[in-house]
Structure formats: structure tokens, C-alpha cells
Figure 1: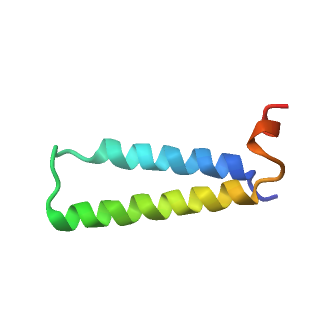
Figure 2: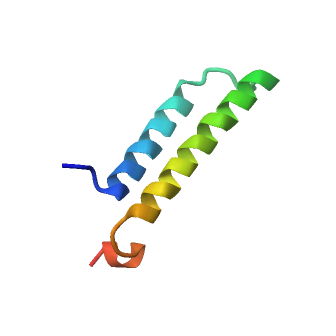
Length: 63
């Protein structure tokens, strides 16, 4: 059984939070900032795709 797209979205957000919690320093160098930007951008695009593929609208999810 495949996961519900909204659960995928929640899982991705949890992973992003965990990754952010693991950052120990308060500033990143240019290369680290670029890599983080790529990771976050990829996660956002993946979440957007999951939301698009979700059955029904977000407003119907609570019904």
C-alpha cells in the first residue's frame, strides 16, 4: 500500500526538522549554504508534487 501524499509531506517536514536540528554552527560557509539550499528546494518540490497528487483538495482532507 502506498503512503498517503499528506503523510509523505509530514514525513518530509519531519526529516527536514531533524536535519536542521543537527546543524551545530550558527553560520554556514558559501558551499554549505548552497548544499542546504539544494536539499530544501528538493524537499519543497517533492512536497508540492505529493500535494498535487493527493486525492481531493486540502479542504476535503479534514472531512
